[in-house]
Amino acid sequence: MQFRTLNDVDVRGMRVVVREDLNVPMKDGVVGDETRIVATLDTLRYLRNRGARVAVLSHLGRPDGKVVPSLSLRPVAAALAERLGSDVGFAGDCVGPVADGAAAAMEDGEIVVFENVRFHPEEEANDPAFARELAKLGEIYVNDAFGTAHRAHASTEGVAHYLPAVAGFLMEAELQALAALTNDPKKPFVCAIGGAKVKDKVGVFTNLLDRVSAFVIGGGMANTFLAAQGVDVGRSLRDADLGPATQIIALAREKNVSLHVPTDAVVSTAFGDDANATAVALAEIGDRMILDIGPESARAYAEVLRGARTIVFNGPMGVYEKPAYQNGTRTIGAAIADATRAGATSVVGGGDAAAAAAELGFASEMTHVSTGGGATLEFLEGKTLPGVAALERAAAQSATA
Ligand code: 3PG
Ligand code: MG
Image 1 (spheres, helix red, strand yellow):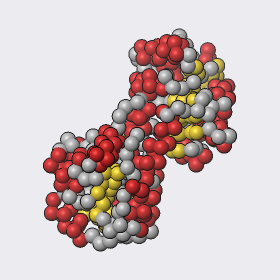
Image 2: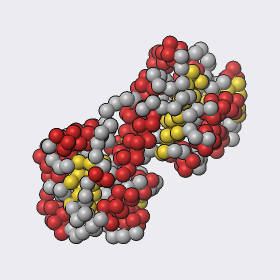
Image 3: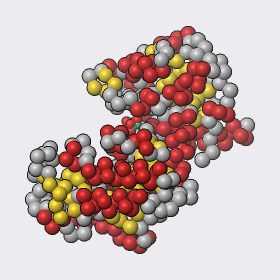
Image 4: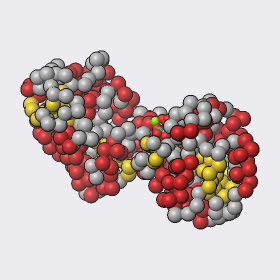
C-alpha cells in the first residue's frame, strides 16, 4: 500500500477537508458509543494545533439521499467538542451557499463539522459535480474514515480526484495494523470467527484459508458447521443451506487448515432465556438451542489461541450480551490477551467483535481494535477498499506530477 499521510504535507494555515467516520450509534438524539469520535482526535488535534482550517465531513446512518433530522450530525459535533475540549462549529449543509459561507468564515485552528453528506443522493452515487463541490471546502483532502473506506462515495473516493489526497492518522493506523495480517503474518496465524451466518462470512473464510493455520468457530455459524457434520443442533439458529459450510470444511481439509468447531455447548429453551442455561455435550442438545460454545470448547479454543503469533478476532462465540452466554467469548478474549502479552499481534474487527471486546473488557489488551465493521470485513475478504485505492492513485499521480 503506497499512499501519503499527514506527515508528508505541510498543513500549516491550510484549508483542509477531512473525511471522518462519525457514523456513531444514536438513541433519541444522544450519541451512544463514542469510540469512533475518540478515534478521530489524533488527526483533528494535529490539524487544529497547526492552525489548519478544518472542514469535517461524515455520514450518519442511512438517510437515503434525503434530509432526516434525526440523522443530523449536530449532536455528534457537540460530542466531538466535548472530547476535544475546544469549540467545534457546525454548518447546516455540506454543499451550497451554507457550506461555502461556513468554509469562508473559518479561522486558523477552527474545526467545523458539516452536515451529513448522505442527505444528498449525489454522495452515494459518487457524483463528480458533487465531489467537486465538497472539494471546494479546502485545498487538501485528508481521508481518515477507515470505517467507510469500503464505500466508493463522493466524500470517500470522489473528492480525491479533485484535491491532493492523504491519509489521516486513524486511516494510517488501521491500515498498518491490518497489513500485519496480510504481509507475511507471523505463524501460527489463528482466526477466531463468529457471527450469525456462514453465508455472511464465506468471503472471509475463502480469503483467510490461504493464510491462516486454524479457525476457531463460534456464534450462530458454528451451529451450521455442526449441522454440516451431521450433528443434531435442535432448535439452534442455523443456515438452511449447509452448502457453504460443507465447501469450507472440504477446502480447509485440502489446504491443511484446522477448523475447530465446538465439542460442547451452552444451551437453553429460548433465545432470551438466562434461567435455564446449561452446558451439555453435543449429543444432549435435544430440542433446545445453542447460545454459547461450551466450557470444554472454550478451553480448547483458548489453547489454540495461546499458541498463536498472529490473531484475528472476528466475532463473539455466543450471545455475549447475556452473562449466561459470555463464557466462550470471555475465555478466548483472555487467551488472546495472554498471547498478545507474549508477543503475538492481535487484531479485533469486523462486525460485533469490537463491541464484544469492549463490553467484556479485553479490548485494551489487543494490539489493535479496528473502528471498521464492513470495511474490516471487506479487507479480510481480500477486497480493494475504494477509499484506500483513491489515496494510492492520488499518491501515484503526485509522484509523477
Ligand atoms: C459503517 O458503520 O459500517 C460505516 O460507517 C459505513 O456505513 P454504511 O454501512 O451505512 O455504509
Ligand atoms: Mg456498515
